[in-house]
Image 1 (cartoon, rainbow, N blue to C red):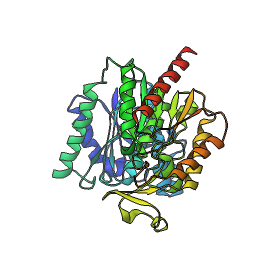
Image 2: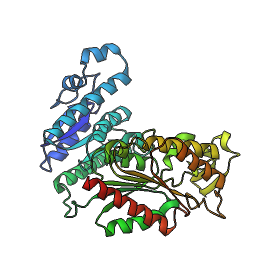
Image 3: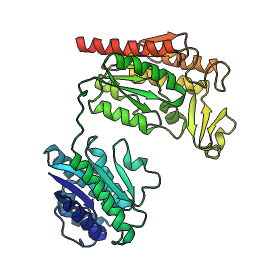
Image 4: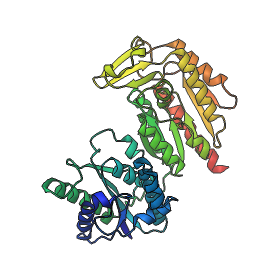
Length: 405
């Protein structure tokens, strides 16, 4: 078994070799993978660039003939990803280490995102202190800010690279986490601050019935992570109370989970109870980040960094129809719960987003889009204890139904 070190050895060869030696000093086997395509490697590779590009279905001559850096980076990323996945499938991969700037980070993290949770992944990057969602995705990647450029070994880079290498070594040498409770069924639940009371109460009830509950913060990356784990076959039931990311995707907010949100459980046949939590809001950052076209809409300052915008009745009708459409072909037992008295802590009598007309449009969109989605309309608020208890009981019943089928 070996740690794969991914780097463009024409520009980052000395630094990659430094990491290799730091890991070797900890008694770990490494393979230096050359992901470069232009200049000659500064140090010998264990896996040459020709093999990397062949794994991507191309070759060095073709890549160089194109003369386009972006295409070369994409080819190297595809090839490295393929080699890493093959090594993992053979049981020969202990972890992945990457280092570099924008190109190196793109190459390294593409391989890391393809690997399952728990495989050690460390990326030293010049971009680690900025917007990193596109690099991390929904995987457990440790990003380390290089502070200085990854160019030579100096008193700063020596410390950064050594610490990062030791971090990966610690993950590898600690071994996989053993959990005596791993036989408990895993339930995924979605939560926002404005639906916390609902999920907290449901979680207690599910755990009392022997489930282990994973709560995902519905901030875009949270929803993506949940969908990914469902597709990985790790989840036995889904309590998708908080589908707010759909609103951000529809309207253009900052916390979208993408167009595939609310599809994994339906596709994989996983039992699910779905609700409309926080579909009353679209998320922006500070007030200055709200697009000018929305400045006259109903806005609520959550704090200095988060501004919420109330969804309209028309938007709610579309969101209801989208939920019905995505659930209509579910392969597993599915149920929708609708809280008539409000879908978030801000959407109730006396609160800033209370809007019965918008809730009515949401329900009509849900019921009118397609038949066949079982929906219970409850004269409750989403954060009422009775709503949470109904959601938990219904999910447990659906999970038992599937088990007995």
